[in-house]
Image (cartoon, rainbow, N blue to C red; front, side):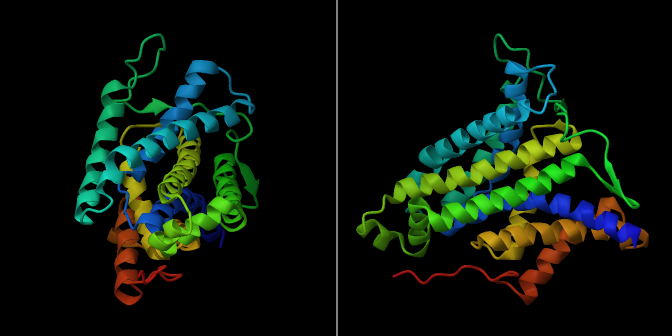
Length: 315
């Protein structure tokens, strides 16, 4: 029973990370019907934005008060990248066949990885580390440090931070979507962009906001990842983005709360598979295999996802 509780905590922690990234996929898809495969790199750039903020302004300081500034730096880097991505790469292709923006997204993903790998650490006046190696991420007081013991279950401080971020971001997103004018505009555009435009809604602005919202959550996830694993690298966004896309599909692509449920489900399945599947097909090397086995099963038996895909008939 203790092992089950421990793996449940581990799964919720991992799933919270997936969910934060997956919401970005599903928000953008719900608005423009685009699978943004470069979203994992937005998550990666958020982690490097937080690290850069710490190196420039707070190097050597580990006090908790530096964390909000690191998160702000992460959000600034991710949102700027996402907005530029939408304006330069996706907006000109908005009326093109769906294959064109999909291929573009893959190209942007590779570009952002290589940009960070080649140019990060070569900027003047600041002694940034070389991004070709794993870069140590600052460990901040209170949110990192000695773990808590609850019975025989170990709970890392960074795990509490990650789960707390998901709860706060989910609550903030619910309020934004349901209680603000811009959020209601996003709902209208997701249902019918042409009618929304006729009603006076600036569709281009709403799409930019959708990219910015997704990037904000991915940036928070990037900080949480750095605090958990103590280092970051330019490749970290690829697999995380793929898992988050899987989570979005599991929950129902286009459904925000489905992305949260899908992320948590995926994290728990991976954690349980590591601990409880015996023999050759168990252990951590197989956790990715079982994650995608789950995806295949869901697509075969419930292709609309756990909470059902958000499908709208547009005139």
